[in-house]
Image (cartoon, rainbow, N blue to C red; front, side, top):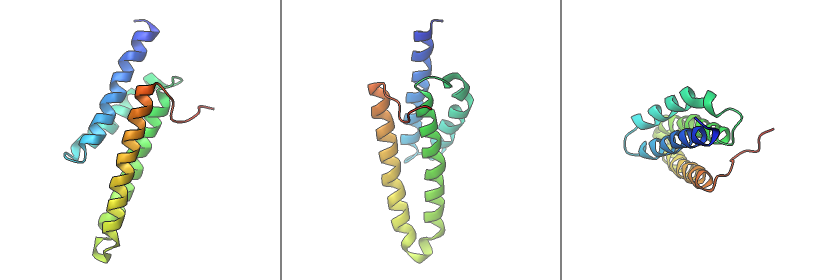
Length: 112
């Protein structure tokens, strides 16, 4: 398999993970499936421009989970609803930005 074909193949996984993250608003299990795929395929993207997307997706999942848990734990104080609202907006932003950068063939983070 050529480098271009390998890049296109892993790019499909990157799209799939963004789709699974977006579907998690309806089916929560898809976010878990997405992060599992991300960790399994991470070695394949190391050193490529797609590595930044995999890091972005991991951060989206883990920080999103943190915000949602914080929101759920504070709903009895009523502030939790605002935290959950913020988390949903933040997750939509992260998924949309990642998707747009992927379509444009751009990295999300500058690799050092």
